[in-house]
Amino acid sequence: MTLEHAARRTVAVILAGGTGQRFGARLPKQLLKVSGKPILEHTLAVFQASDVIDSILVMMNAEFIPEAEKIVGGGGFDKVTAVLPGGASRSETTIAALTAIGDPDCKLLLHDAVRPLVDQRILRDCVDALDRFDAVDVAIPSADTIIEVDSHDGDETITGIPDRARLRRGQTPQAFRPSVLADAYARAARDPGFTATDDCGVVRRYLPDVPIHVVNGSEHNMKVTHPIDIYLADRLFQLASHAAPEPRSPRELSEALEGRTVVVFGGSYGIGAAIADIARGHGASVVGHSRSTTGVHVERPEQVAAALEAAHREYGRVDYVVNTAGVLHKMRLDQCDDATLDAAMRVNLLAPIHIARSALPYLRETSGGLLLFTSSSYTRGRAGYSLYSSAKAGIVNLVQALADEWAEDRVRVNCVNPERTATPMRSRAFGEEPAGSLLSAEIVARNSVDVLVSNLTGHVMDVRRPFAPISPTEDAAT
Image (tube, rainbow, N blue to C red; front, side, top):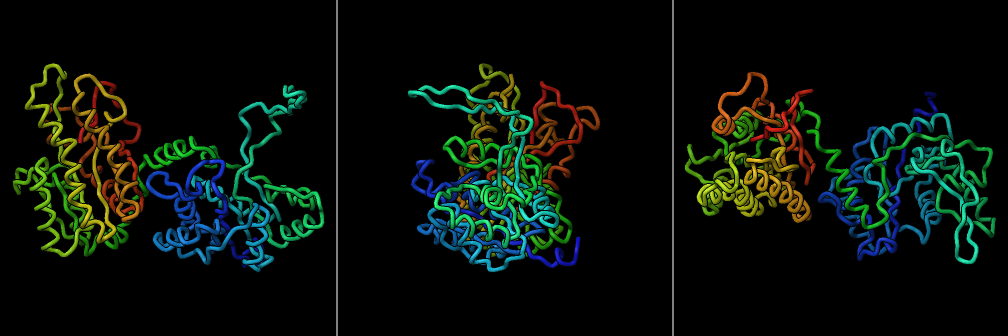
């Protein structure tokens, strides 16, 4: 890299000027929620976290600038220098952004706000490519055969089938030296027949001698355009977050936990006790509850409410609430008596609901987090686990719904899905199991704490032993 290139700052422009007309929603699609947060917030988070992006400019639909500014302020996106009104077209928005930046030689990335799943590798590749090229596009190979058609009296017929090996599907960001893009638009302004929806297309048409480098994109880097895309994006966010976040260093854990208050239901043994030990070791005030130690029954809402109120009264705050309490009965549904059914549903499903309801006022004060637990049975019910599986599936849906409901309160809600774990509850249900076949409660707890203190919300995080086979007849139990 030359000294000239090293000195050039990198500015990302988030193009959020769309109206959502094709989407048919009341809000522009960039403000619709995916996985508990507005799409714009997800997109900004990627650029905020990038070590190759120096500043961010948001070009927003003028009617919704206050909403965008609220997202920027609430999300702590300090790289954002301004939220400005976008133009009536993509081209007008780009020109307005070039004027606002005022630096002809910086590295400029233009990205659709409604592509929230762009990854850090793509950003780095685009920025690096600007050391060698003045224009960069992002694209992926076409998996489908593309056909050219013509219409005669309302009937379409094929007129050509391009070689698929040479075709790509364009994405964003697109990256430029601003002076080159500005020159292309200046030339386009003198063309009475100018139309464009793509900035690289403007450079290609009006500066044909400028090579446009292509960076490999990603299938996940989808654009939310149609209503079904909201569902697809939500699923992709879940898939992307199934692995627990990168482990926090001891210093980072202490920064997140020191002076905070953590309440753990089911905290007397197993995963709950291990979470309590980790939090306490990093400076948190920890309040653990269970029926065997403090007499708190999680299925009794009045006891849950009293436990949280007492923690708040003693420490003045409640930052994190964790529930690992559960019961596991392996039996056929038709052989289950009413008392067992009632107990299983009250502890495994209703108790997390009671805990969530009572915890919200305290977590709202601290912008805190709620962590619940599921098991692999939430994805597919198995014989003998009808009660357990149905409750655990309910927990997943509860987490996703609460993440959306509580987004405005800045309260995070997540779920951990551990592989088969060595806990007293599992031992009671299955007896002695082969050594080394189970995860330790300490490993699950360490991953759980990383999830608890993260900025993620609405996600189900898997905790797995590397390369460990799971028998199809066995269930992961917390």
